[in-house]
Length: 281
Ligand code: KIV
Image 1 (cartoon, rainbow, N blue to C red):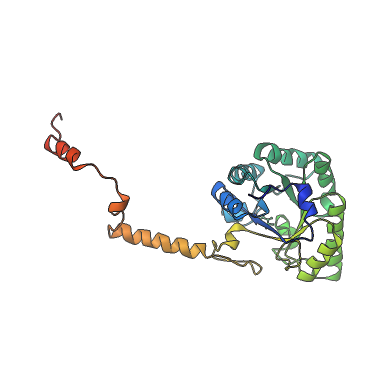
Image 2: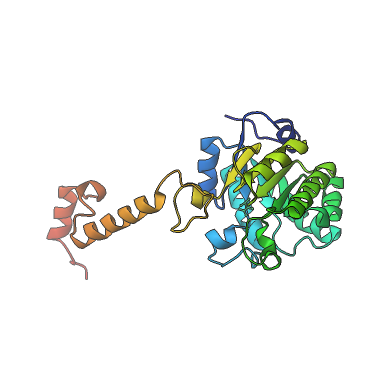
């Protein structure tokens, strides 16, 4: 069994074999990702869109994250677990501490992930000062959906590339253990990876980051629509639909349950019942 990574160990893995992160949202998914041996399981606020059916991550609450993180922790006790702080739960250093504290104490998170660069440094400082490992997340940050004007690839102009690089450097200088780079051009992600000393984890950021993260449902082919950067490595949606339609057909034709999937009573017992049935009624 692989050793559960700590934030310190994670930092030391920069530049080595690419790190494998994946999201999970419940006990059974977490068991599977632990058995597969991924490096880090992320309880993402993408739970809002993938599991809860919201259009964005904005309605996700801290209680929602706690509920899902507790399930994931039970399913993957030996895997480093990072948990997202959802929208508006880290607007001040005190609020960030209270929110992250709940994830650390009530779900046994190993790290929390916050979206944003220099604008959240005071919150990052407060967390790290209180021994809470922090994962940064810059580029396309879904919680900023409205200010980005939609889910758009970021850092495509000279100015915005420089701003992103400055954010990455600042997060790194302030002590984050890793930085998720989402929805940015591959060359930009490669440059950021070269200039920071912590592992960068890409999603829609090309293949030169220190690792990759994927959303569980995208990775395993469990949705009907994929972002451009997502590659399904299995067709679970197809398998599930196929299984459901076979179940339906076999129930309707009485092929299921067959003998093998039914319980039986010994003939002797049945005959005794039959012969004296309803006698006392
Ligand atoms: O919420 C999430 O799943 C994430 C990943 C996409 C990085 O933040």
